[in-house]
Length: 271
DNA sequence: CATCGGACCTGTTAGC
DNA sequence: TGCTAACAGGTCCGAT
Image (cartoon, rainbow, N blue to C red; front, top):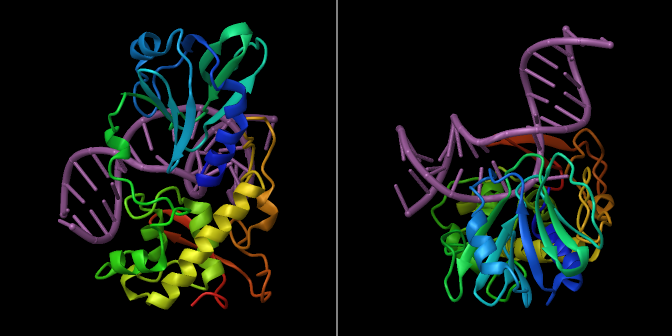
């Protein structure tokens, strides 16, 4: 479900509810996620503490506290929601972070590709140590993409989804940004010009910012931390629209599998 | 080093 | 209606 805009939406939804609230207990009902949940460590380090800041890096949420950071990844189907009072957990409600006064943050994840990690103060978790630049940050540019793509034969779509190259772009927004920049998803990364990469970097920033403004993309059941769905789906040009007509030129859109994943494009607008 | 396929899971939907 | 296969927003790791 969640790519960068959905994770950002989640952050903004939960932050005002949990910041500086005293944590009473972490309840782990299902410790078997993408990686085992470090249950004991979480209890030990977070009990009676609070989160003073929440950040996003790539698709990771980083909840900062006195002794270190709780790092959460939502995987494919994960979500985090805040509740102001007790609520019976459902089948996929794997973890609750309980605060004072019956308030709690609940992690739900049917497919269990999500993860919880602990990292001590001033240390960098290995999973976050090799990430590429944030696409909305200043160091990400067409020049950056151009330089890093020379000699590489990988499809541009996969290049964009490689988190070592640029963080936070998944299947939806890779397709969407390539459409906006007029580039075919299967074109090799090394064959794209600097000019086109400048268009692409612009398109990536544009589509991500617009999606964040709309509260993310709700394809099926995504809701932000405040339980509201995202409204960006209506602004998608190609994702999930194969067989339908291009919103710009009315050509029938295609769905091409690139390394096992659906890739949507317009054969006329994208060359 | 670059690239590809498999792996981790469950739920939904399309097709027979 | 019921069964099976394909597919779904992610990404790490090992083989090539």
